[in-house]
Length: 266
Ligand code: FBP
Image (cartoon, rainbow, N blue to C red):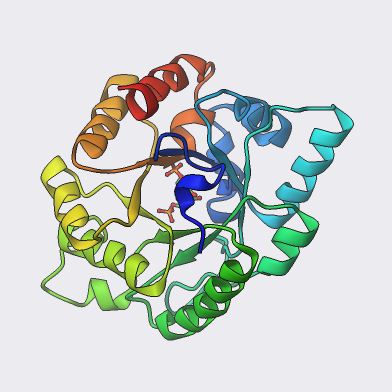
């Protein structure tokens, strides 16, 4: 089994994954603060910044990405992470579930994926189904030697109806989600920021050497965002997977420059 450190999605052991699956997960509303971000090629261009170690796309955008690279002879595009599952905000469901729309085989053989991603909603009524799907994904990824990033977002009735937990950002919940990444066989686990550096340390204590990346969250000022990233890295985190805090900025290059320093150079 190859180490994720030898894959293109890490640099000096850390990652900056530019997440751009929001059109699926939240809908076009996420592009309203920066309308040009609705154009995938704008965000593909942002991903050419040297700080970005992977761009995370759903299947359709991943196909678009590969065509864009070819048509424009782009030779410095970010490595591609294909998100295999996703769900919209439109559906009415009894609890969280993220169905799979792409196989590992299609991602690797047809899209030349450098990594794959899977969202896991532990705590949902549909956790069992997602575990079974993840097992197939994880075993196929091992056969193709592509790293697996788990978006580990415990949420749903099991969390909401458990008085021991205050919600999905509760440090105990975040640490439990991270631990599942380790035990189910991910190479990198992406977790919500639990509100404090102490909370991130609790996560690190639960995951052994598994790589952890912070989920960006809604847009905030450069200072606030960099403070959370620095706290994460100081506590042992391995970077971030970020969407809105990059593509909702008019000029994200300045922030990417600073992130590059924090994640890879300091
Ligand atoms: P952000 O940095 O914009 O929060 O993106 C990270 C991410 O995990 C995306 O990949 C995904 O679309 C979104 O957050 C999902 O957020 P949530 O499920 O909490 O609404």
